[in-house]
Length: 577
Image (cartoon, rainbow, N blue to C red):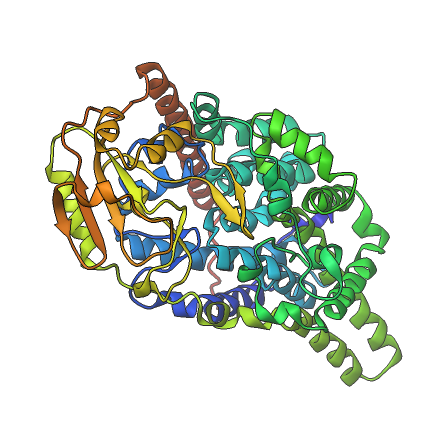
């Protein structure tokens, strides 16, 4: 396992495999328009505002991802940015896992790399998180194999290893969960030697969300009801433990592909586990980095199942309700990303060993059959992943009402934030085929938005953290009180489920009366609460620090690569007599 950083004598098969998987998964999303599914909400341009920087009243869950997206959409269309991120995520995941497998005696990763890439990149984890739209988590998941490889290089003292680790961790550090996933992967690569530098690098990249969370007025603790609501669940007759062992087990049944309910799915998981056990049984695989990777996978399994196992549920509820920031542990199944690494590498090594064993006993056709079976198992485990998880990643165009509302709000220089009704975190619009999607107002509109941040999972409420949201929603039927609270506009999103809009809102002056949206003006509004200058300066400095670290690492790597290329001795010209 420690020689996983060795170059591959034949790297192109893994690259072609990664490209093929990427196209099979993302092809529908590459059509014109924006994919709007779950948290995957793309707008033509995201503003670099208080929400994007983590200066609103909510916890900074999308920091610094929204700030990075705002910078990208300032120069590129939002739809193009979204498509590029989806493509790069799947491609990097498959190729990274394939390259994490140590090469064989012939210097090639071959079948082992292909199986590892498919187990990791064609997985229930990818399918389910795509249907939830959790693109920042998937960016981190795709970065983990590269972070481990960079950590291995840092451990050996390879030149340029630390900047390479920084660059590998950048996609993961775009979210709080991703930063923690990257930190674990980095330590798995470095071990104690180099762990301090690796963790320091990830910490610097994580400064934006860490500082924003420390200075946020939102409650740092979370509703313990979320532990049961977000606990890993069984997908078929085998229960949650087997589901998580196969990298599935998502809490939201609506985001689980239908194929995972098959009676055969647990059997496929068992075969993959058998391959992984066979691969890790090789002594060379269990030394050094291999042992650390197995330990990381075990930690991922423990966290993923903590909300489902008796004895751990109560402990987890106590932690999330008393320890600030521990709410990151509620959705435990996401930590199965750590487990996916040793599962993929072990399955790849197991496939190599199984084929070699069969080849020594039976004719070549039998060995080829075993190789084909190993390659097919990940596909059979989640056949629905093909074609955008069964076509559910198809893009749509934004209705014109959204551009109209944005233009009206941008042109008005009066005070006041925007309240969005009906209350609810997720929407289901007719123009988006009633697919559940995160309310887009906070990303689309050029003013601070006040929107419900509580959730309902299987009918059970999970309270949000922003105290201002609860105060404003309680006053939604009193325009005078809304004005006093700094609400200058009320946006009513038509045709989506939610509580009834208070009758008093309909009596407010109408600025936009569209088919999909109605924008009301609230007379006499005062300026809404704004972050203190010290908080703005601290959060801004944290963003700047992370950006400088990433840019310097990129420049150092680029300059070093150019310098090495210039120092190479050109081949001597042969002169024939």
